[in-house]
Length: 378
Image (cartoon, rainbow, N blue to C red; front, side, top):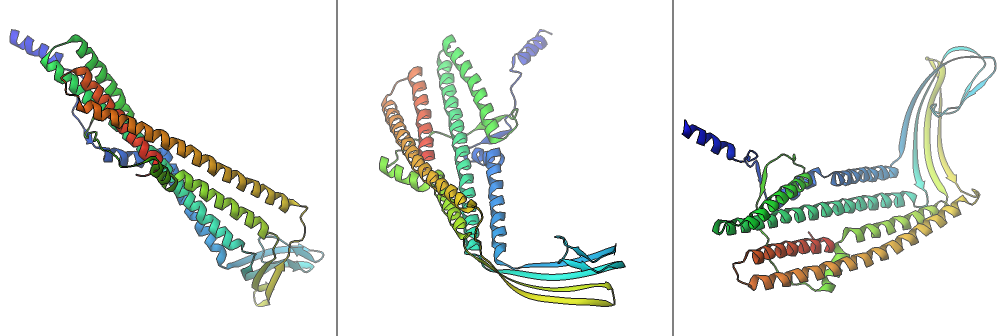
């Protein structure tokens, strides 16, 4: 009976929250999961699909429009009446009298021949907006990737510190070390929740992570990093695309001064008797020359030019911001790398020194992630 009680007490003393690990994740899997569920990434991806459809819509301007219209009317009028509606193939004259039905059928074709280059400019604008949407999508992906990597390696660093405390506690039971270990375990649980949230898994999922913080010296200089940032940072490309969009907008306003030339053809069947149809047709060449609209066009042109100047200033501002970010990240990386090398050279069996090394390793990898982020390279 005593043995049974002892076994029962031992069973109850086991941690009630101990659960079996459901998934073991590495850094690549975490990034992949996050990119598949992050809402900002998904919204940016939908914006790319939307912009792609705008390209298809703009491409359709090169093709003619073809309409087929059927109409059936019943009327009674004392005098001749004109029917004029957007839903009818043409303005129709109904004679006086009472007619049971009036039928009309029309097929019409219109093709733009010349509109001052608006069609070409509109297509170019749609393509640039599509490329801009792609770039914005890359910005979101880079941000999420950096967040996940930073959180992942924060958990790795905490695991290393937990292992350090466990190692020293095996040699020497110490209440202070035990308290510090308990605090670290609690912090690790909280940081795991952050990681689960970032990668889109249920918060009660039991996971473990595998990986290590690798030390590498990048053979880079500051100017090379700045040049790479100007080349690879999506934000720079976004401002360049916006400049192109604004310049096209200025050109489109200028094109409103130019005439437009349209070619059209139509064939109509009209009548109030199914056995007796009137057949009309025409071929038309239409030229429209804008002359005066109260100065509205000039006001729109000034607005577009002001917007273009604003974008140029924004690009210069973005370049200065990126240069500052690269300088800070490069300095941070070099500081933690040099600090890590010095601590690695120190050989001591001291828990405080080992914990310091783990902290420095985490700050080193965090600075490395930030450097790649501000440069814009994956």
